[in-house]
Length: 258
Image 1: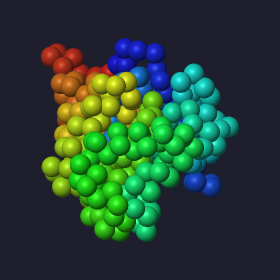
Image 2 (image 1 turned 180 degrees about the vertical axis):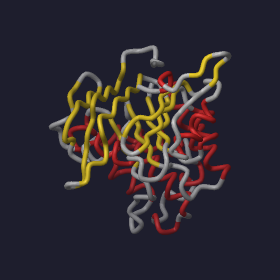
Image 3 (image 1 turned 120 degrees about the horizontal axis):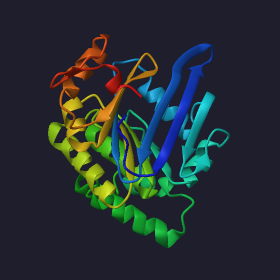
């Protein structure tokens, strides 16, 4: 099984989560090391968003362990988890459209000292000149893509140790998708880790160190992003087929499983 090469910042073992009586995650094992970009792929309904919600405390964990920076998260609230240095950017342009860009970012850093909060806002805006130029305009004046950039900037205000990004490419043009992915790479150079849910497979793999694929709430594949045969194996996951990969004279499905 591939490893991150560092002590995991995030370590998940045997994670199970449900919506009421509907079980969604079934014994998920996953880890993210400091400064890594790890992409989470899989067909619709595989449990990707549910996994991020369980990590950040938005959904109760019914079994298993989630450890972040050597702390067990199972009984913590989302606010407590956020204060440990984990930021979750939820899918779907979740910004306050009646508030200005600056006010959205002020709210993201509400519990920071005033001077520190101002510096963090300028730092977050430096990654996205398009919304920096509209800092005094309401969120409703932004395009859908710019609202998505603002949502990512809200996460950056926290200077997180780990950034959870759920479909950041949604609503973005190809140029802006590349911008967001480039920002991710810049963040990892500063030590921030990223766990990314994304449907643009090729772009996500190009920016990632490792990849997991979920299928029906279980890890179906775990491998380094540049591994030969990975794209074919991913196709089999998306099509619901048994995973096989030929590497020289070796063919093995287990090699891609946690």
